[in-house]
Length: 137
Image: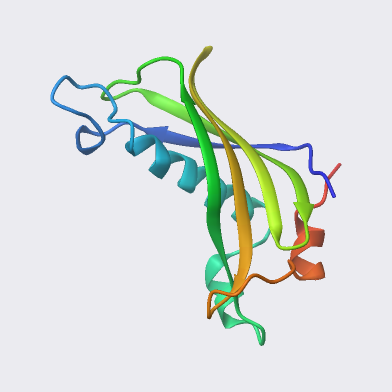
């Protein structure tokens, strides 16, 4: 199953995200990517709190992430996190993410997230959840 819609989420760079020079510290990008993934799930009607309340509670965890940094972001920049669900394969979701400042690519990530039971065991993504992540109009 492949979803081709790009989800976007705005992020403002705050002082707490930067190093002494006012440039975004590399680890802060991981928070931005996480927010982008969470908000893209939310846009599909998938909410973490509801996943935990199911009869068969599930959680998502990042298993693997590759990152590339292309340009610095600075304090007060308004960034846009773009998230694309590329594939759902059993318990795995493959996503591409990018952080942009207007026309400038700041960072890129390839993400493999897994669906798990609350006890931490991998499990196939439930059909109703997978259906919400399917391509839209």
